[in-house]
Length: 386
Ligand code: COS
Image 1 (cartoon, rainbow, N blue to C red):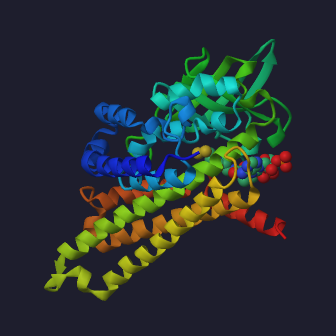
Image 2: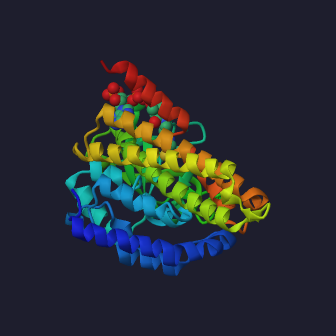
Image 3: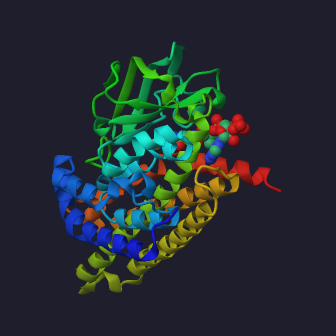
């Protein structure tokens, strides 16, 4: 599945222009008001951004992973809250249905996702189950032809915007094999949202708890129709999600580097632009070298991802995805730090974008699996392989 090269080039240049001309100028509004203007959301729908990864057969654009990372690089060049409006829709929120859903589930949900009519969100994390995702406690008890769900999901991105959740709950015994993935409509009686989380950065993104109290969903809402497969579905979804976070990291690093270059050319000290000092050049050079290395890695792993069927997991590819997430997000952390350093005291002041990016960037090393989770996955797979 991929968009033809000509249409893709057009899409990519449209996204580049949208980022530069509409989103970057709206960054201050976002920071001040903690919300994405509705006019921009409408533009995103019109451009088809809500359906980037949904196959054309279901009304989407049907990007391959190699194409998706290129788009995400461009979207990374502005505040991550803009991408977050549709990011869960085309990513972790809907990929479970795309990868493992029954034909009926795909036909029912994917066209609405592609049109932006239905926002989907991914609900795995719980108060006591973060990194140890297989220990989740939310229970789903069979009652006739329905499951009754009870539990709390935490830090759920886009929950206040969501029309439905891909939600992992326990239908069986302990461990990964007891977990099922459900499609849970957000208006199901018994679902409540917690108060909006106050975060370090990423203003304009919405995260909160999702609390389930005797929420009844039809048994047919188990993704793929077979209980006990939900942990694997979640892990497959996260594989693709982690690669996209890696691409966003590269885009964000390139924007920070541009900001630092501009400042280094303009700011004068000791009678000349600070960019003429070799210690400043060293910071820019390290950032450029690391960015290029991370981006080459992300694109190479994306090609491998495309060489296998989307719903089939390959432990070697998963390991490489973890390498990309580990390296690209840690690279971003270093580039953001140097970006502030090049700006000196100005880098600590809110009116310079690097201050905001520094805070925004911190989350990328945490969500969709911390750096330590990626190390664990890489280490385990290395020892398993011949
Ligand atoms: N694709 C498909 N299946 C996978 C998989 C993948 N990428 N990774 C693991 N699985 C399968 C395993 O093959 C195993 O199947 P079998 O029982 O049939 O052998 C099953 O899932 C359990 O896997 P594993 O034993 O690796 O489970 P662990 O509990 O040890 O999981 C980690 C370990 C830490 C890797 C996992 O829990 C994880 O990724 N945690 C982080 C979660 C996360 O990213 N949270 C962020 C929330 S979203 S913002």
